[in-house]
Length: 286
Ligand SMILES: [Zn+2]
Image (tube, rainbow, N blue to C red; front, side, top):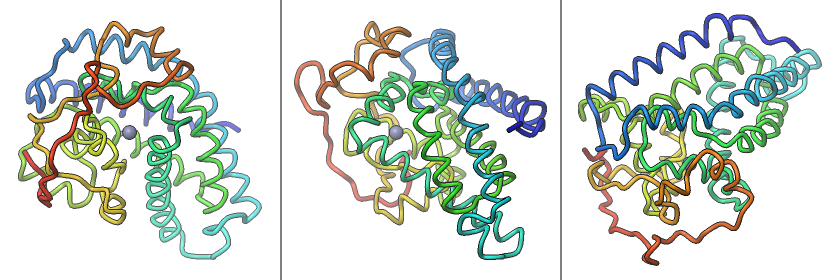
């Protein structure tokens, strides 16, 4: 099944421009102090992302797209059967896909087999827009099955799937960026969408904090499931996974092999379990 040319010729260049803009913005207005140079992070995370990009372009997009086309043609799936107005089908389909992705992200943390792969993304010792590309190709490969089932069951149209994918990728780049927005503006944005400070808490070495803020586009799902955590100031966050703190263990080859070896407990190399008291504040902390 051929993907619409708009994806390669318009959406991808627009996304690439957005990434360059975020790189500049986080360079000029940094949110968290970084430990490694941008050039080093850029090379490591983007080189690591190449197999993942290949899987996205050759399988993660075409296979679910073909499933959505077939579901629409044969009137399979919830939204294809209800006979609702086109724009209602579009809005509901878009929101449902984001909610389904909340569950997928939850499963990537809670199911030990999936965590082996998602762990690679979280081992980044700094977080910025390049982290948005640091996904093990295995995690992307498994998401093909998840996406295909969701598109089939809910009857998401191929057009909504493509629009969702473009917005989803932009949202992932935005909330991973190290761009310091004014706290007032970010608090307003965080009524609706996942923002860099909110997602920064998800990348903390404190496990309770990592196991929160699973949203991608909308922050509502974390409110709904009481997994929203906004009380940690960004200065207080150490980014990464407690047991993987040595960058010599996080090279290209070792990251590719990481899911297939023995997984370490969530402890610092000295044996301590990082923790901190919860503040119970509802407003997004600076
Ligand atoms: Zn995660």
